[in-house]
Image (cartoon, rainbow, N blue to C red):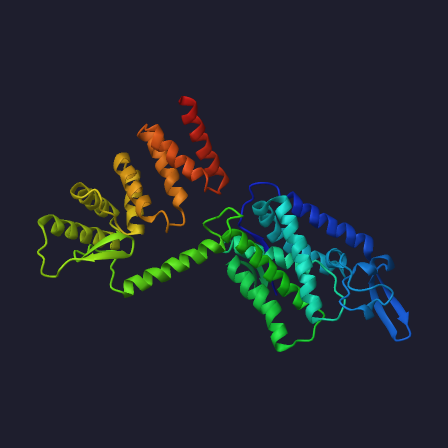
Length: 412
């Protein structure tokens, strides 16, 4: 047995809409749940809902409820607030509490409500397309919320309780737990091997699909502010790594100075220099310094790499290292209190890597703070702080950036 009991994702505000939905589900359950045995000409069966609640289940075909035309439009929402047992509703609401709080926090109350209801409708459609049996329960809507959590917070840890031969708690990244355990193992595998069950797998899978596609589309269209840890950012990083591998396979060596080429940007090489053209003393010195920096970096000697970088920009201020080297070296300069050189290094980093680096606003924020607090240069400070403010998503950083901008504007 394995099930989630929490996550390590903090909230920036109370998820009121999620609490309302959980409370509403319990209220409807208490009002409609009435298990009893019903005698018919065909035999005896157990009914779990009061008679008044029967029309609010989702009936894909008319023969299940011949007195009313089916399915009715409202049933694609109302079925998601009905449950068949205490275990049914407790399980659904546990998942909604664990994964829904952070999704509510990220999407806002209205956005979260629309995701939940949209997930219910889409899950109902998914069930009606492949099954004839009536369906009830919030599982499809909860699956949509869980899928959205995987997109928005893929690498946060899910705290998972397990009970096999041993009992304990472990921590699994949300991407792997939701994708492999909840989607593939719990829902796709039973469909593939055709395990007979009363679980609405079609509704679950349709809900997961809705919950994954909608947030991804919102991130791609920039309707939802980007986070550096969401699935869209992961896809962007994967694409950049693939492009990097292709460039390296083509012969470009980003960690070394190559006197045979002149580069217009990261990974873009244009003008070839003839093999028999002699190197100038300056080019030889630059090549040696870049080689020394790379060697120091590989051996984790950041002091040595930083010293060599200072020598390098003394010879040619336009020199820029590979993306991670440049950032690590400049961060070291900042740590050592070399604020002027750090500012120049961050400027060079942004000029070369602003379009490819996923955390560019962090660099802009740092650069703005350096100009504001250490170099007392208000105009570039305002420029970079304003640029960072438009992209920052972490509330504390955004507030710090806004406070610094307000202070500069108050000082004139």
